[in-house]
Length: 71
Image (cartoon, rainbow, N blue to C red; front, top):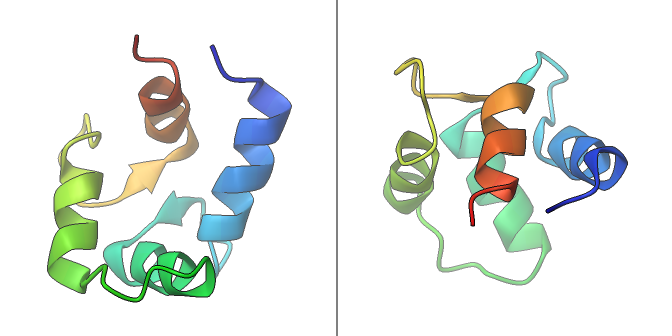
C-alpha cells in the first residue's frame, strides 16, 4: 500500500496546471521529464482510462490513489 503523502506529492507533480486532475498531456509531459520520451499522448490516455472510474478522461487524486493501492 502506498503512503498517501507520497501519493499526494506524486499527483501534484503530474498535475502541472494545478486543476486537480491529470490529463494525458500532463502525464506525457511528466513521463518525458522522467526520462521516458516514448509515452505518446495516446498511450498516456490509455493509462489514464484504465484508472478513470468516472469516465471523464482525466485522473482525480482519488482515482490516482486507488490506482496506487491495487494489489
